[in-house]
Amino acid sequence: MTARPVTRMVRLLLRPGTRSCSSGLPVSQPHPGEPLQEPSIRRQFLREHVVPFSAFLTDSFGRQHSYLRISLTEKCNLRCQYCMPEEGISLTPKADLLTTEEILTLARLFVKEGVDKIRLTGGEPLIRPDVVDIVAQLHQLEGLRTIGVTTNGINLARLLPQLQKAGLSAINISLDTLVPAKFEFIVRRKGFHKVMEGIHKAIELGYSPVKVNCVVMRGLNEDELLDFVALTKGLPLDVRFIEYMPFDGNKWNFKKMVSYKEMLDAIRQQWPELEKLPEEESSTAKAFKIPGFQGQVSFITSMSEHFCGTCNRLRITADGNLKVCLFGNSEVSLRDHLRAGASEQELLAIIGAAVGRKKRQHAGMFSISQTKNRPMILIALFPVPRASPQARLSIFSWDPHRVQGLRCQVSFSNQMVTLWKRYSHPQPHTPAQQWPGSGCLQRHYSSHVHSDANSKCLSSASQAPATCSGPLPTSDELTHVDSEGRAAMVDVGRKPETERVAVASALVLLGPVAFELVRQNQLKKGDALLVAQLAGIQAAKLTSQLIPLCHQVTLTHVQVQLELESASHTVAIQATCRARGPTGVEMEALTSASVAALALYDMCKAVSRDIVVSEVKLISKTGGQRGDFHRA
Image (cartoon, rainbow, N blue to C red; front, side, top):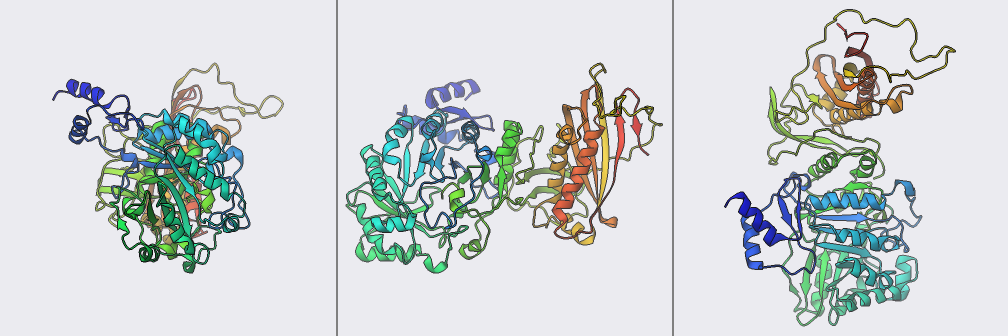
């Protein structure tokens, strides 16, 4: 089949929901409720022309993340005991929360890459004033099949008609008891009857099933299991019993948790005919149904039988952090990168790095209960302190003389804005192809990207030392001081624009212990070389904001190289900056090398405080009116 007939068939079979992902190939996902034309032919065509899923949303274990949960707010109109610490929480300042446009920008990016389901959460998402408008705009995204919401139900009856009209297609309602007085005790607020009104409104408007989430806690509501199951006899509900999970401030105790098997045994004693339903792909729930009942019951077994192997979920918190695991404390700020002007490709690189470092599974219920994490209310309702997340680098094919292919897997601190230029797609790999740790004596790290090479981040070649080409003509006066001795910025408006290049260097003496941990990439905070490299790149771009009288320069290239010197336990840093303009870029190069050295210090300071940063200096400078400079 030629390319042109295939294109015509794609347009015929897949309209109007055609989109493209980073692979450049068309992907079709019709709007909810849209009738499909010639479904048998369409299914056959899709089987024969499978579109590769976005590499950026595929982790190192092959899990494809097509489901995104977005928290719209940290605020809630209830105070559920398992979700909100009794003493309350410190809310993020409004300026640090995602704006509506930022939410939609990120949603568009994820949908373009293959996400076909978005769930809006909170806090309580339905207290956000523009929630209906957000749903309506999400509904316009080509390829998005499902828009869901998880809500406590207090405002649901009032808003649901508008939400349904806007395009809301799925509803989860949190309800942990059928006893009004117990409801007030659990959520520390009134509102039971409003929640029940919301459930019935959802059924009235045709949502089926309406999912009801019930967190089961021993000594509180496990005696209501059978009452919840009985609701499914005459109502199209999917009652989902959730094992009690540990989060900051909810005083989790193993004795409070009622396991899935214990709940299942209790229900089977009353209804022995209970039958298991087939599990949907990537489903978190084990579903059961009693013959003759309209609805069904499900169990979410996060604690006793995890479902990490098929996890396809990512989460964006209300303050814009990407969480790849509900129980992980590693996050990366997408908000900061958005506000720094990161391009779509740069955002994808950051997202792909975070997804790529997702672990095979969470640590287990007892380890999770000891791990620092956000309160549930700060993690999209269903879940780090603001410490720097971990970072690591996985290399998929290593040659001691040449790096053949790699994928950077990084999460960054909220303050670090990573804007990689010309970052290309991550290369596919297998879990067996991993960084060998001690397989090489030195790690050489460079940010330079060659257009005709496979290496994306690393370079095994160090640059030759610069040589002196004669003294630099100097000025007789300080150029940043006016005639009265006051600081002044130099006027470069009349200077000719030329190609400017500057190289600067710095040394960081780590000592034997920290050096070995860096070489083996075993620091608990993550890959020190990678973080230092990215800090150097970012610092070069922000030089005019750090050095008061520096001009703002549009850099065309920044390269930061780090080389380990085993004999002296030193990391040699070299920063190269290039721009075309009327002023030089030596300050950008010096700032880049300095900040890279400081970032390396920060990554290693927990291991040793006896770290020395030295020899920050300009190596070479070319393109200026006063001639070139090359240090011996």
